[in-house]
Amino acid sequence: MATGSPVLPLLLLLALAVGGSSGQLVGGWSQIKDVSDPHIQELGGWAVRQHVSLAGDGLRFRRVTSGEQQVVSGMNYRLVVVASGPGGKSASYVAVVYEQSWTNTRQLTSFQPAPSPAPAPSPN
Image: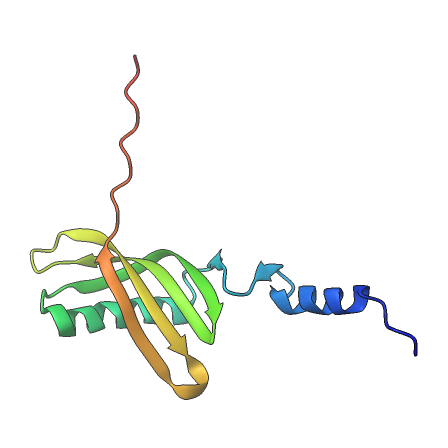
């Protein structure tokens, strides 16, 4: 009995590991190209409201400034959001949200102050 070429199963595995036409690996993080998308902005606002319901610190959502997404059994979003405190001072936070649209599941996985950018080196 003839055996098939080992190339076909390898190609099938490669096709399964690559998601969509963007070449994004399943499970890897990729930049969100349009953070002004209404769904992304709504996710950012939802994340801040969830955080406030747990922490009671009175933050108010302003906008999502950048983000990444990760394909899992659903989607993870790592969003940089700007929110203002009760005194009106704005700060950046990193919110991680898990969403599974077909089960109407949404969870705030993490909400932390964004790391401060490293200071520019001083000229010598």
